[in-house]
Length: 259
Ligand SMILES: C[S@@+](CC[C@H](N)C(=O)[O-])C[C@H]1O[C@@H](n2cnc3c(N)ncnc32)[C@H](O)[C@@H]1O
Image (cartoon, rainbow, N blue to C red; front, side, top):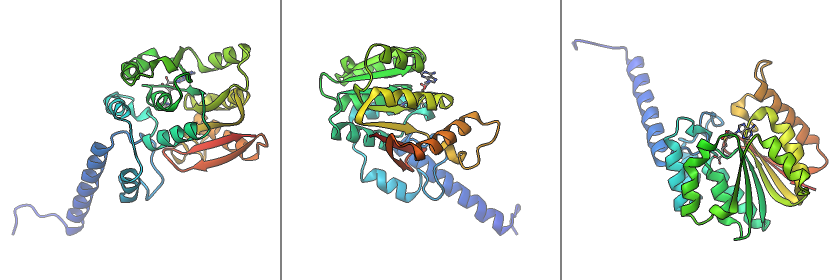
């Protein structure tokens, strides 16, 4: 008779938890900040699920300096804010496909996606990168330089609405090829409307976090971010100025193709 005995169900449950934990740790070690961050992935398709892992193992072609920045960002207390690397790769492919020259990044953080887009733009291309926090961008800046694309990134530290208004006032309407919206969710509708004016016909606006960790299903009255994203999702569905596709990638991304 063992000194301490526990019921079989408890032992099995504990062992399963241990395996789940170990799998999560291993997956996180392999691809830290794959992008779900604090946002829970759709059920059965978590970042540690074998299928998600398979997709990444068979599709991710990350530039070594992007990988370096991802690793650096993983150590940041808000590292979970970083865009998912598979989503960033899709954006780089779209930017290349449409032969973009001028792109917008609304919400830069450590600059992973700004770098990601700058890497595929032509030498005279430009990323107008908007954020309110310079300290975050300071983490990525040396790597923008190391990658030789620093000259393509025009970082504007002020509220993004102000930068977008300045671009419009400067006669830059319909001159951008691509925009990525990834800052404060409460301003998403305004960002979208301004981007729609700044982006050319045939250009693309990518909107991140459109599933908001599933909270868009039943947005609570006190969850302003979920309300704003949900209202925008409803509006986009009926917006005759664009075609759309919503992908369950990362925390959900909608691609709006300007008509
Ligand atoms: C989710 S992170 C962006 C992640 C980034 N796109 C990447 O490639 O990893 C959101 C960023 O939006 C910025 N932000 C929040 N409110 C803002 C505002 N009003 N104007 C500009 N940036 C803002 C935050 O400082 C933060 O860096």
